[in-house]
Image (cartoon, rainbow, N blue to C red; front, side, top):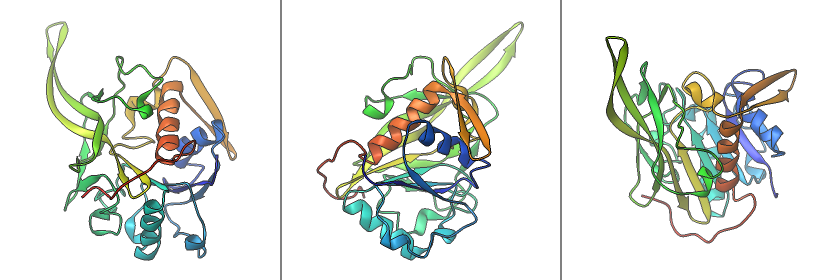
Length: 258
């Protein structure tokens, strides 16, 4: 595999960032991490990464110059993945809706707070075939606790949705009524680079039961601590990183989704 992954956000490696970092360490994916309270390093524009992952990392911390560099790198073949959270997309403090990444990401963002929190079941629904979704049993879907409200661009592809259910007690049983369905994973292309937008989080609390999805547990040391997750959760995120970063292949491309 070529260059490293640049992972920006999710606090620090002793906190929420341990989840994605644990997956990357478990699968031998090399990465540099920038904490949510840090700006990209001074030599950021001199570095070349195969994939940029932005997760709960505010646009104000990122800075326009660094984002323009990422956009140019994606045009030339790097990947860009954004994961959901309060500091992603619009969020509470993300505010990417007017950033240089607007034309690069495969989704249209809201102009105001896009956070959607749900106390009742929200199940992940597979709506397309794709390499990212391989190797895991989507017929037994996990749930999530929330996401950022986004819409797929016309030339992008929605792979997963989140389906809300309202549940009421009915005697000794429960009644489930299917409700609104929202885009959860959208993929696209910009120049030679691949892009992905996951509207929910990789770490608690929005990730919900997704983090435990699997038929066995995977434990991984991260710094002085460790995380333990479900193997299907880990497989999904590995697939997402590898496909978006073209870490095992190169693909021809066209323009960005508008």
